[in-house]
Length: 95
Image (cartoon, rainbow, N blue to C red):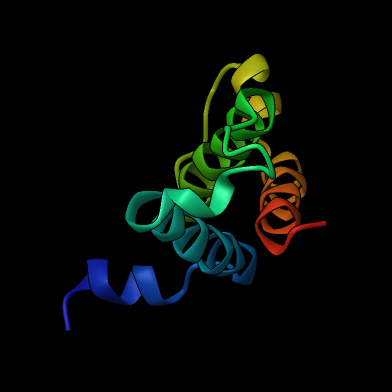
């Protein structure tokens, strides 16, 4: 095994959690976006925007990217991403 593969296995658990949360949510949005329709058959663009923000934050944290500027650190913080992904899972479950 090369050193890059070993380094990827030593990734902190929180990064694996981010990837585990973001992958199913992004696949659902990509493969079957009809699940996001409301009772009237329309998308809630505000909720969709928040879900996509959470997905972006999950990928940024999950792959190990650490933004330098403090504003991007806040925008893509893992806690923000996890909260917005939880909102996405709540929307998908029909809550």
